[in-house]
Image (tube, rainbow, N blue to C red; front, side):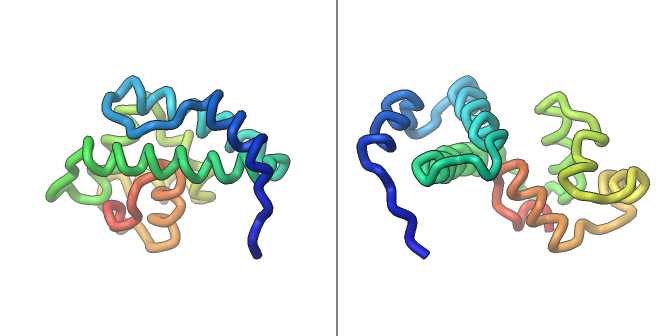
Length: 134
């Protein structure tokens, strides 16, 4: 299915958002805030807003993939780092992952591996490649 985009409306959204290659953490935070505002609209987003959300998400993912070198870090260490660096608590992930507190705790401590479906949810939530959670 191909969505029809109103080019003028999309152009106005682009002019307001000013998307660009992200070079600093501050630019990344600004982009993440824009992403959150668009995500909060849920199903009421217009096709133009969906397109902008996709663009902003890719820009943020590209920045984070290059800025955060997770190297040989274990998936649970990456997850713990992401939570800490964003000032989040474990419970903030419960609605995203739809799992129990103990299940999440086991993932963070490394007692339980992160399942592929969970890794996909984390990748979507953090806007990062899924493979860093596997």
